[in-house]
Image (tube, rainbow, N blue to C red; front, side, top):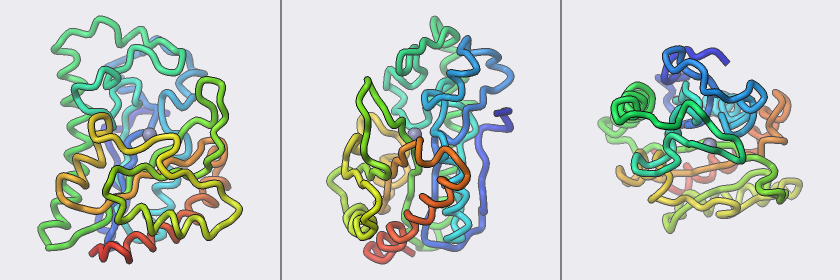
Length: 250
Ligand SMILES: [Zn+2]
């Protein structure tokens, strides 16, 4: 994927009580970074981006008339869902692959990556959310991710998984809606919970504003094709609708 900028805003003026963020939408590497020293095959794997997540975000943005902010930079350059102090912010290795270009970065190079890609993307998220909050609205914050179907040799059965902390005002009604579709396997804080010490986007954009949130992982093998992306976006619509209603999002 060619790098076209640190972020893309889809449907910026969408009026739904919903703001979508996709931290790992792209596997693109900015030209000024050059080559990470990672093979093309590895750049297509989940370590570089969340396969299918950008397309699902676009489907949901359209279905709800909501804005979606898609990060433009690969998580191997900088992971936009990691706290700045996290050692995996600019990863040296990921799922068995080393990232040679991330070794031995100077403090200036690290600061440059944070400011050019991480801060710029999150500033775009803030702008969209601030504008709605300034109107007295309380949108649902939806963080869209996808996950590998296999980690350390173990298969993950969950096709859609919600990650939460103790604030489950949006998560519980969304899970109830998902479980009404018997054909899908739903994860509740499996394989990941939402960890405020590690995750960045939901704590920063939702919890700090007191906004309700959903953080979702789609299993990448079921959302790798356009058909799968459309199908799972549609399966997820009732969950978002239930969360918006239960939380009185506006
Ligand atoms: Zn992700």
